[in-house]
Length: 331
Image (tube, helix red, strand yellow):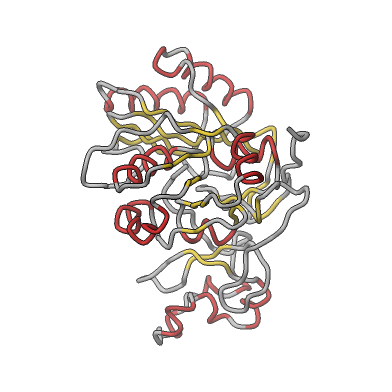
């Protein structure tokens, strides 16, 4: 284990990254008998503490990301763990800021992360690798296949060395994509995501599809980087809040590239076409020189009407975040 990594604490993408105002990330698959009542209790607790963020609750468990002063996130953690169902819940933390989330959202959902597999899947708990085991496997078993089960824009900004990035826009596309990985059914497969929640479902899906030797990174990228920083990691880690990405500064190797120019950058924007609005990576200087680059390459190639480029998309009026809005929460 190396020393604690040097996390970025700065103003970037319009958010002051502040370790005294952390973002906490947590989930647990556990039966919840009355999700609607639990939503009300969670909303009341977070409102009392002045926390912002998103909590999704289903009969299968809880998935949350919250931001606030450390004193209040600590009170929330203590309150959550006082419930026997969550006494052992893992809480991941990274530098945040008062602007990480604009509001509090607490909702009931059919799933705490939407896979939509069409069949009931019990999350896998028996094939987790600790960060140390993961690192050792990468170093000692070069024939292992590493699969990134996150969305393509997440992989574009950061990923493990030699990882296969799933070509999907959202997690619910994974069931239809798995067959494209069928050549690896007899290989040892390591999969990872941001915080672990997607892997517990993805692992069960892969096993159901005939993959025989599947393992997942316990706690995801964020837990791994707390122990090993950028060892075997390239770039930044996408997060589903206004920070857009977090990174470990020590030995950082950037991989994000402007979708139009190929220039290295980690700046996300949303496509200015209201019928698209997809996230993509755009160099700020390229945008200044070519305002039409606020349309994604696919929309420009399709001949989008550039006269519809909103005034706010021009550099003079653009926000510090580049105008990007984070998609719905995953971990």
